[in-house]
Amino acid sequence: LKNSASELKRLIHPHAVIPVRFNKNAVTPDVLNNVFAFISFYIITLVIGVIVMAAMGYDLGTSFGSVAATLGNIGPGIGLVGPIENYAHIPGFGKWFLSFLMLIGRLELFTVLILFSPGFWKK
Image (cartoon, rainbow, N blue to C red; front, side, top):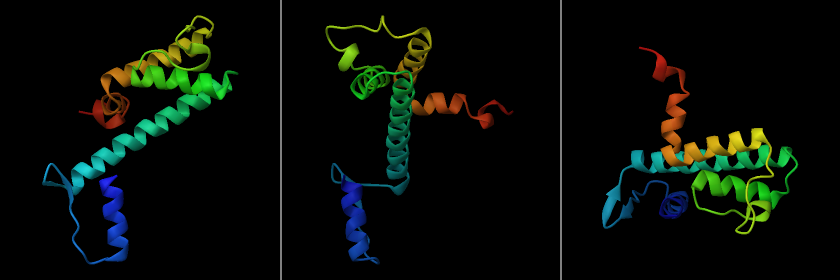
């Protein structure tokens, strides 16, 4: 949010130097870019997961709840995977997909993305 406010100030004053501060220390642009990239990849993964679950015939609440619960490792979801329900009714592919999202959430997003990048496997 601080970066967004800083960018709005830069639109008004294009030549101003407006650092983003955290605990009274200026945050470097590299760190801000890394944080933005992580949040972007996380949201993209969440949206793709919801689309896959919705394509399997689940309502939007169940799709979002199951993906958010597994990707974020936050416990029960909402909808058909809520606190009084379970994942038993989800078909095999859905369970594998949600398990993969759970691994992404536990290992952190960049770790899994690096494993699937071709540059990682080249020597």
